[in-house]
Image 1 (cartoon, protein in one colour):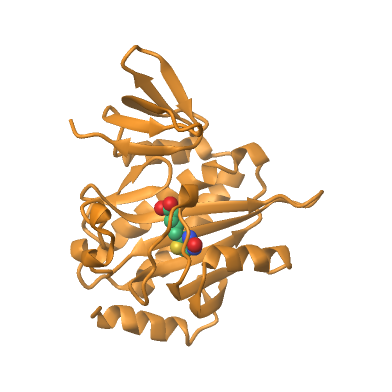
Image 2 (cartoon, protein in one colour):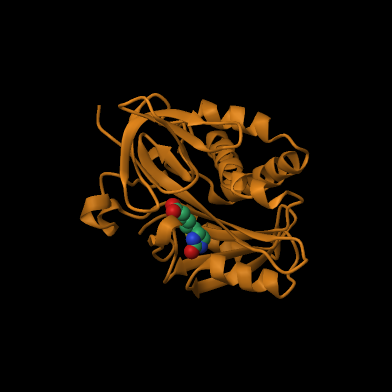
Amino acid sequence: MESTNKDQFWQHITSIESVAGHPLVIKDETVSTNTDALDLAIHGSATGTVVIAKVQTGGRGRLGKTWISPSGGGLYFSMILRPRLDISELPQITLAAGVALCRAIARHCESVPMLKWPNDLLLSGRKCAGILTESHLGHGSEPVVVLGIGLNVSTPLSFFPPDLQKKLTSLEIHCPGVDMTMLFTSLLEEVDSIMARMENGEFGVILDEWRLHDATRGKRLSWVTADRRIVTGISLGPDDSGRLHIRDDRGQVFEVLSGDIQLLSP
Ligand code: BTN
């Protein structure tokens, strides 16, 4: 995988201790930065600490999926948060982080980023980044949330399993020469800004921005429920609490809290 910019990024990152005020924990190789960050958080590491890795051997996605994280092919990092939010609001962090990702990418890239509920960032209809938030609810203590973001930067599509090659993409295809140091810095700043707004009770405003990037509203999709039933229908977009609404062919509206969503061809 060739990209001097990406190599310069790693050289730069390993020579500094913080980015945008976030202490960095740098790993050449790890299983999962989310696992590392959760562990550090439980043992008292500072809020805002970011664990970043050049390669992950067991990168995780939502619903037990794998996040393919080859050496230097992407941005793989996790941030420790201790948000002043109610536990019921924690799932909203995933949507808010999607908005932060869109803002950062839009600032450094001409492609228009879109979002697929709840955690996928798409460029030209293909998934380029994913968000995995995981929480630890200690007894009596404030909840700890780890916000993990994986962004394919220069991973060749041939690197992905054949069934995913048409669904995934890498940033450099859309934004050749993107400055990864600037993008990473912007991303951390946008997460800070959006988390401050969340804590200020402004999720509604963030959601309005999320809706501007909604890749599936009005489109036909299928939803695999937690008990493996398949619901097909039209996406009505997220409601004010962030739950996706789907209207099936009989007019029944489902509120989706979790599960896998697939866009169907028209
Ligand atoms: C998804 O698309 O389902 C979420 C993918 C999240 C991947 C990132 S990479 C950094 C962090 N560490 C992990 O193991 N997962 C997240």
